[in-house]
Image (cartoon, rainbow, N blue to C red; front, side, top):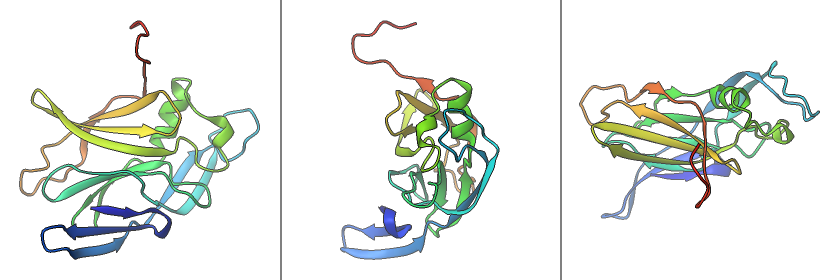
Length: 178
């Protein structure tokens, strides 16, 4: 899977045959209760409608599902992440929840309110014990959102997160825990 960020597109490529399997728009998202004014105050009371997702990072989370970190580069930034199926259907979108979590724990970048807010850029997927986890990382913040992920490989499963942890502050190498 390849994202075409500035074109708001997603392409599925079969590397073995060097062919395009599918191509579709990443679509738009409506964001409610977001801060859109850089004024030194976090005031999440604005709405942005039909914002292009413009996905940046992408990761497979099963044979038929993938997740995108929707950084957004134009007109307010989409500030979310989404889970798609291979037909281009959106199964889950986080909307403005990452902005809200960042503000709640004191990590919201108010100086980016007019452009991209939390600005999710990277996304990764892995397994710890029996739990499938999705990690969504914003630009320039020492934090990451971690989501417990359904077993997407099971046929007929929606692929949507079962539960989520808040954005968690990260540590630099050598910093003590605590």
